[in-house]
Length: 441
Image (tube, rainbow, N blue to C red; front, side, top):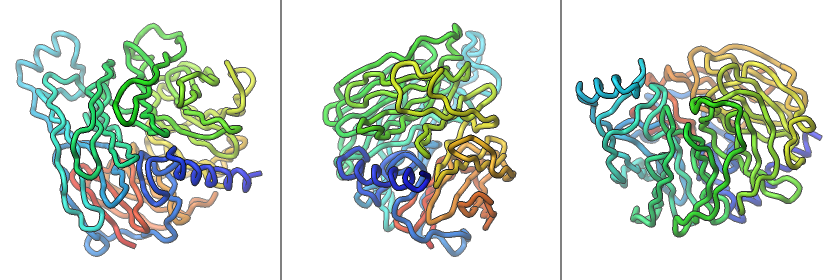
């Protein structure tokens, strides 16, 4: 059964890429976490185990500003986003503090430039640095967030640069000319986080704010809103416990595409063509859900968010409210920030403070538990039989993809890693707080 499910997800992945459900070719990396949104390279057969920044760099390029969006690529170019902030004045800080808009440890900017960055794949040349807009008086953000955290998505020669409530831009991926711009305004509370995904000719956006919660789809060619579906009602009355930051996972179940979107209280599956709700499961009172869901061994596995994150596995074959019928298992100590990797019947994940898990995907039983040093926001990568975990202290731990989780190597970039890595051919792409690196085999 494990072998059948593993083959199925790769067959579906190939079909997605062939029909446009993925945003590019199979060897592209056109959205967050790669072609199928699973953090898995479908083509790399050999990737670096040891990373020596003195010897193993094909190129490195400085990226202006701050952004935690991951690099995406197709047709010879990387795209990513960044933000360049001007400090808030003492008067602005005093006004926001007095109004209750600035809490301790939050970041307040006077103004923010939102930019799209394009880098040549082969040479590392900075091809475009495009100012999309300047946001005056931006909302405050969490210090672990940025104004450019959502990862772009690419399809049909276009790139979607999304900044949450501040707007969504569609650019021609070759010329960098503006195709359209759209703004769906919500209150994030701590800054934007959800990334766009493209399904056929639709850009699917998650808008789980403090004030309103909905899923929307925009036409890829025009930016026109195709559909909008409100999230299910919640028990919480405080908007802080309604917000979430996850990104849709697109899977095919019984010949029906499903957009799987975890959120506060609910995990919901939607028809990405129409926005129709297919099924929902009440996972409890978790909120600020950030990790993407994972599909492994016939189950959707996701995390419940704060305050005590749990893994929850749901059978995605039901309809309506499946809370009492299709939840298959729960397990403690899930990540609050990073997503997971499913592979050959196992789930691999690292919690925020470095607790590393291999779980049986069918049962939730802990196969192995160990610890990695540091703190984690970036999602892991599986490539060429190896797992890559990068942390906020700048370390990349490489482990074999086995239930034993043998540690193969630890490399130090010397600079925070919060963006999830990407793959190009057999090379690895890492974004630190200052640079984009292409690491050669």
